[in-house]
Amino acid sequence: MIIGVGFLLFSIVDEIPKLFVLRELKSKPEIYKKKGMLSFPLETYQEIDGNYTNTIIRLLKEEIGISLEKASIGKIISKNFSLIPGRSDIITVYGYGFFHGNPATYLCPSDDDITFAGWYTCEDLLNYPLIRVETAPILRHFLKKHAREILG
Image (tube, rainbow, N blue to C red; front, side):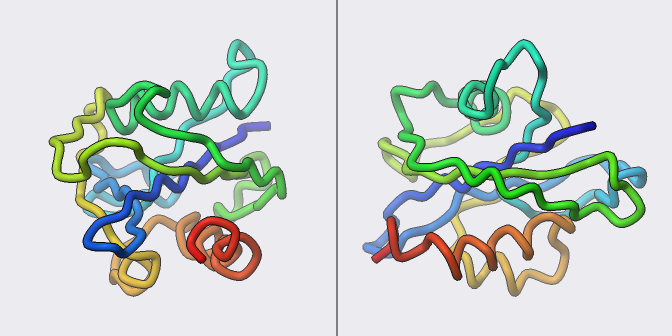
């Protein structure tokens, strides 16, 4: 079983909570990922991580380019989403939290498959014409079940 761990990292930009968004630089057809797609950061759980929190800590460094001191992890949703068509061996879970730095700071992922695309509202990301297949179901779940907890 492959477990993808997503992280919705929010910052307050112009008094509006916005989400850290990445752009894919390479296609991976086996997981329906195309160059140019947007999404929140996702990282693959590894046994060495021990738990999803440690995967998110690694994700912060690799996918966003920050340490845990610059972010807080609010909650991890362990609902197992099976979102990749034809790939029942892949499930996705997600967490959410806040960025504690200046959102105008240049953030640079260490992974060369992705680049920082900007800070987007959840609605703007949902309406973007090219998003990863995991993005819409997880964002809709977050907005329906958890957004009020942190976004008011």
